[in-house]
Amino acid sequence: MRKSSLVSLLAGGLAAATLMTSTQALAYGAGDFFTRLGIAKVAPKSDNGSLAGGAFAADVQDENGFAFTLGYRFHDNLGVELLAALPFEHDIALNGQNLASTKHLPPTLTLQYYPLGGTDWRVQPYVGAGINYTRFSSESSALGDLNLESSWGAAGQLGVDLLIDEHWALNAAAWYIDIDTDASLDGTPIGTVSIDPWVVMGGISFRY
Ligand code: NI
Image (cartoon, rainbow, N blue to C red):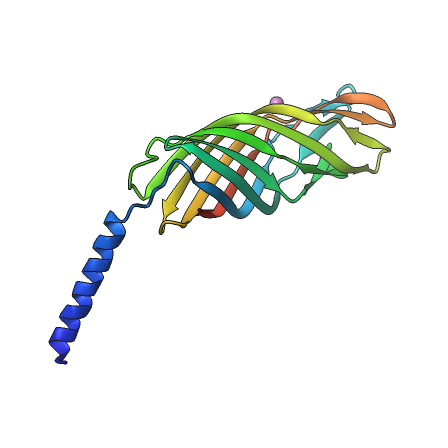
């Protein structure tokens, strides 16, 4: 085969493949089960409250970890997604000193709206709103026996899938979660720690 015809064959094949891909139904919508996984940063708001009648200013530190979600699209434009993760461990600074730490699991369930769902757009943004339940564990403090109560709160979400093919996409997502916990030290209530983090995740999506 002559070199020029090989080139035109390749070019033709590439054009056909591109055409196939662009007209191929990516079927981003109703009936999809999906999972998203990536690295998440949990960044609590900067001022987390004062404890023990103003004696301590609490500052919950940022933490990174592995996170994943599971979800289902029950409509082209609507879905539900559960954010799960391995427990995040946060240091808690009191008056600037790292005097405490805790682990928490932040499962967050959101109802989502996909404005471009059901179309063949490759950029698929979404917004969501829902609830969070946070359970704290392994609380420890140099000051005594620290306990943090579980928290229920509202959550909001923004995200985008950049579709690669009918299964894979790149994903970026962020949640704002209202987490407020009542703290006690040696059984004595010392106030509320307001964590209210942004959780920012970057990774991949898989749907089937
Ligand atoms: Ni709050």
